Length: 289
Image (cartoon, rainbow, N blue to C red):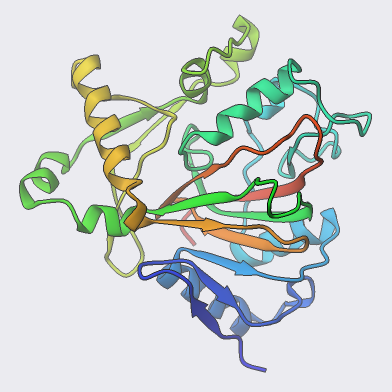
């Protein structure tokens, strides 16, 4: 059966026809998924029954090397095991109980509600993120994820703004983004999170350009700090207008893959003190093939 993709938004985000990704090894099918990612930037695959090992293996087959230098690793031990490439996106602690509202892990994860792109604070940064829903709240409770198309946002800028952004570089720091919410790192933790520099505008496969922004974007290199941060804030406000955004309501078994070079995303609130939500994320590194 040929894999097909149905667009769910005028600019991006598609739904794939039924397929069991854990069994996909054929180069032709993997190439078709990559081509669809170039076109749609975000794709949801419903009904995926991944184990942790199968999710990691599929990510490697699709896109190679995995991101393991997560910010979460410096805050708490990974309850999912020693492989830091498998990131716990949940409100559950190592003992299996819901995290208390003042738990440090929960406070750190609140930063996921800021618009961001995964691993922009590393070099090489993230390319594809693959988030698998294991346990999700009822749809009326919340816990959706919003995505913004940064290609369409760039296209909508005026020529003068595009010219002003040309060649600019930005320093990204997850310590910076978490501090905006009042989260503090120890000196030892901060040494593990040095940050990284990246272009403000990226050229994607096929030639399209995309804004490369995140709550982690801390300063524009060569600009004074206030003006640089104002520029970044204005661009994020522009890029997250409703016309560029799609909201995904999770079903158990969903695997959503997004291209961090072409999108931003954020979690939305839910009653995490009383309702369980467990997802697993794997992010690949943006390394040239």
